[in-house]
Picture 1 (tube, helix red, strand yellow):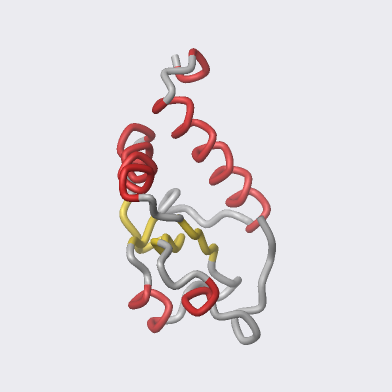
Picture 2 (picture 1 turned 90 degrees about the vertical axis):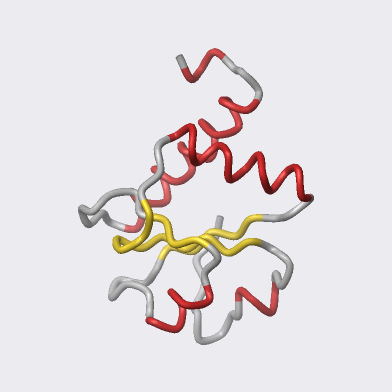
Length: 105
């Protein structure tokens, strides 16, 4: 997990084959089981996933258009630090669901 400057780092060029999942309040809301299927599908297809949290102003229309999936953690606005922590927890939870780990109960 790292912060990037989108003017200096092109996610598509750096990870051309990866599925781009961009976080945006206008995106689709998934529950944890649906989110885990994103990882299951990627695993079955041998595909990497790249997540992008937009800048303070949000994503540009160009960034929204290049995303393979626009994902919303909530319709509420969260600080970037909290959004990253929430995303990290959901990634952990997705793998726990797929591996049938008791964490998920």
